Amino acid sequence: MKNEGCPKSNDMNMDINIYKGQIWKKSSSKVYSPELLGLLESKDALVILKNGEPPFHVVIGVPHQAAVGVTTIAENWTNPRGKKGRDSDENAASFALAVFSELCDQKIPCKLVIAAHSTDHDPNKDANSPYCKEVFSEKIHFLLECHGAGEQRKQDIEISAGTNSLGNALDFGRQLATKLNFQYSLSAQIEAGSNKAKSISKDKEIDTTLVLPALETTSLIQAEKREIAALHLEAKPRFRISENDDSISADGLILGNAIAEVILLKGNL
Image (cartoon, rainbow, N blue to C red; front, side, top):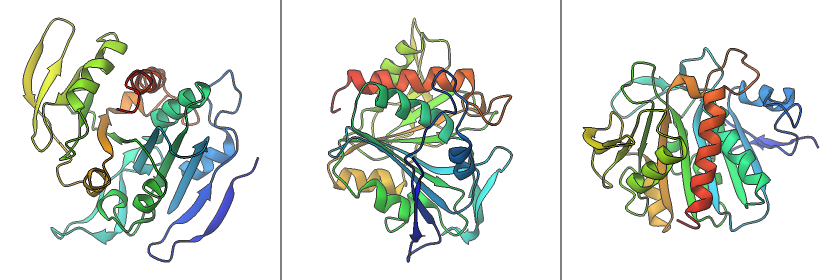
């Protein structure tokens, strides 16, 4: 089926696309369908995928999606500190799609909301953005935001809840590390509102600090106000960028499937 394009939001410059087509070009491969890839590489597009009906078990959010090679978004926006633009999360939708696809296969009601290269605002820092409005437009139990981390980041994966006291980042991180068979370095926030974390390995946990604990992230704050648990996950390029731009990386597929398994294990969180 074709995606349903809607007029641009009156509040901010985004085309709203309810995508109902295939995720993968072939069910046996993890090559994106050309139509979906076009949306992921576009600018000012809000891409929405749904499985089932609300209440949704989980909404997977990707607020800073950009095409591979595009390192800056919101180029026409200035943040409260006077800086213009912000770093993108190159192809963060990649492993988010793997999560969504696996949950769909398991018949779990879920929704994926992707803000592709917003040019005039930061999607998860404004409660009135098209992204935030869509995330909270229907009843949900859990919000997971998927982000990118730079290659220089010490840990492969960082998980936090920002200030959302309903999201237990440490418990989620421990379960995810186990599902990943401890093959990647992973740190998780100890408690909401702090940058203190545990670096989790098979034999021990070491005290560390998060680079970006998302303490001022509006979407996580708004989630708690609605009594919704929320987490913020950052992953290095190996999970987002493959040798072929039209397909998911091997590490991204492993991570996406593992995240889906943890979500299934944790019920309504």
